[in-house]
Length: 174
Image (cartoon, rainbow, N blue to C red; front, side, top):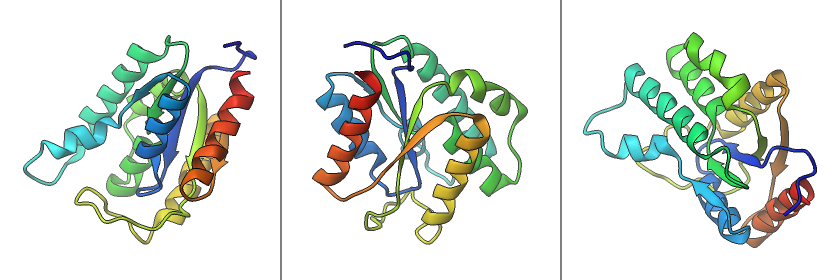
């Protein structure tokens, strides 16, 4: 696999219930690459209470560690990113930790695929924003623009969505 000079770290981002986890697994499988699951889900599923600020901090710290542990792989897909965590802090707590802001320029280096909220909402005990997906997608995109990161939108349902993402990744890595 040749590299056209772009980073081969690819973050899958987007609002809740936009197919990030599914797409991460599909892309990792298609490209025979590493797919790093969303740590927030793993963490939150072990809580027997509602999360708090300290929990989101722990999730963000571990997400940074996961990025550092995997960023040297030839090709790696991350289910979610630090931008998601930044927006989560801002939306729920009206503040973003300085250390997270400071980590984004380095640990956030990569290419971003934003899953558009064109899939039907699927209820899940960890999901909170069924009516804010468009708004949150716009927030992620604004943050990516502000950070100067390269990003692409992924649209479509089912196989169309996967093929859309595969075509984007092929253009990036070939």
